[in-house]
Image 1 (cartoon, helix red, strand yellow):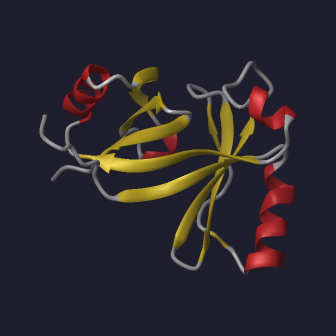
Image 2 (tube, one colour; image 1 turned 30 degrees about the horizontal axis):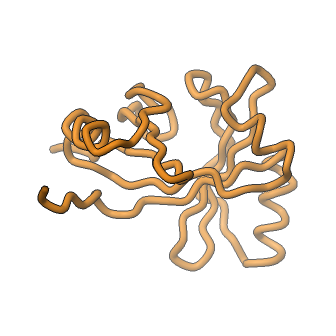
Length: 137
């Protein structure tokens, strides 16, 4: 089997109870700069905001009040939720990952935070990875 590589690293997602509190803490502790306003992604059942500290882009995510994929993590406190990589061909990447044993936990759907480019989530060995469809053109 040939070795498959994901596209470039995009960001790390961190589950938080309250975005506003988390942004202030990241700014105070690490000099983070807000890269976006708070965005409500109804399809993913989260509110999110991007901050940057150094060269690291961090997506802060909080549940939106409806059943959310973050609910279990939030009970334990703040937690790294996922890493995100851009991929040129989302469907082919998912096909490869499924065939290699990864579990697709959220199939492709448009994401409001990325101008409606599709995202999907896969899990393997306890690591959640978000796949972000690369911009084309």
